[in-house]
Amino acid sequence: MPRRFLSIYFPFLATDYALKQHPEYKGKPVVLKAAERGRIVVRKANEQALQEGIACGKTLADARALCAEVMVLDYDAEQLSQVLSELAEACLRFAPVVAPDAPDGINLDCSGCAHLWGGEEPYAQAIVNYFAAMGFQLRLAMADTVGAAWAVAHYASQPLQIVPEGAQAQALAHLPPAALRILPDTVHRMQQLGFKQIAQFMTIPAPVLKRRLGPMLLCRLGQALGVEPECLLPIKVLSPYCEQLSCLEPVLTVGGIDIALRHLVERLCQRLSNERKGARSLQLRAYRTDGSRQEV
Image (tube, rainbow, N blue to C red; front, side, top):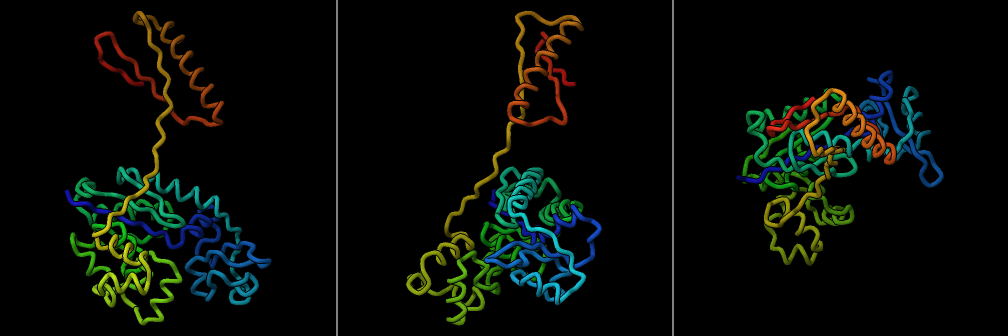
């Protein structure tokens, strides 16, 4: 089975989440502010704010000078990290291996999954629709490698793109060097050397690239092309809380079942209380003497 990976990029993750908390600001320019070196600066801006010329890094005073109607909210990096984790857990309905890609992306190993939705196109569209219904804008790409999927999701012109099997080199060719997930300093040096597209250096001998631009570029290029291995660090799915009661003799009466159930619930509640957690639903699973199972 060929390996296939899917990369999701939320370009407005912070402001989309803020608008879910403040739906009255929908359709208006919104920025998230934070203190930085003694100044209040714009950390994130939604699409309407960007259209007004408000870019991330501008001071809040400059932002308000450009657009007096801009809505201002606080930037909370810890909260956004939690939001990304929750979105990654939601992706487990689409693939068994899901890895958050901080600060605003998720990578999936979707090998062998797309046929369950009728093919790669409807599979990818189902993911787009799922998050759109939650109020999140996203860009998405599928390819043979994590690196190629990430590059296309972040830098291709289309918000949803399926790279055919074995075509990652063609998909990468016209993208900028930054699409290879290299350091900004390396990107700057490549710009000084005149490299504006990956195709311009993709065929340059490896020793030359390594000598001029360092080993990281070779590694990232190899990962994107599929000649270097890359592993995802998947999220760990928590095991459900479970309590078990084994009886020496079958429980035959309603009263006995009630006592057993109360005993199990008390033990489970004690565990949840100790860990400061709660439960939205519980399931009772009982086994008959003939080995059959009954769930309630």
